[in-house]
Image 1: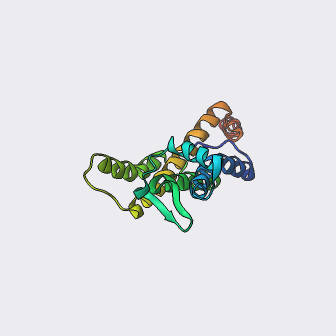
Image 2: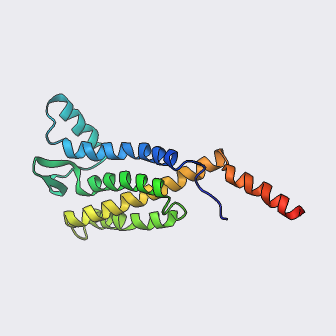
Length: 173
């Protein structure tokens, strides 16, 4: 049996950890979606906070029925992808052993952003949303992989210890 990357013995404990880990990303998504309707000092403070994470150019923001999103289309989709990618990857374990897949999923977002930054073309919001979702999900895969790797090094999985004991007994027999 191969090396386990999650030391959790209970699937529900693993699910709880990664659902909680996805909450900050989902909070950023929520902030982007509700910022247009929040007024007063809180709305202004929320807008300033979101401005630290995104350029917030109005022509690149999502047009919602209640106004423009608080972040650009790519950043809004990125936070959605990161939150759901972290939760789904952490709960199911799919992709945990393949961090390069996650890195590959971020490449279209980086390439699209770079080509726009140097002025070669202006992408559509649909492309920004697609690359943002994929990039966020890929970042979630890499986050879960790194988290599991660090946790395993800190707390070795009990299953490996038990297997080692069984192997030693089987060799003696």
